[in-house]
Image (cartoon, rainbow, N blue to C red):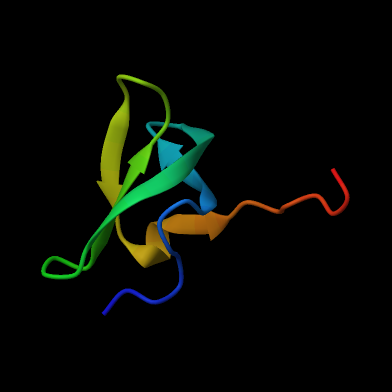
Amino acid sequence: MLTQYKIGDLVWAKLGTTPLVGVVVYKDDKHSRYLIRFSGVQQDYYSEAELTPYPRRENA
């Protein structure tokens, strides 16, 4: 079961060789992966181990 991230969380995900900031848009519990969207046309599935939390700025 996926517990580390919830829909709407910002994460670092490695797309090719470049880490990008994306947002969690779907949790696929059956296959233990998250759908991460990087832009309006770019998205991919990642496991919890392939993601890093994006630090939120306080008082931004």
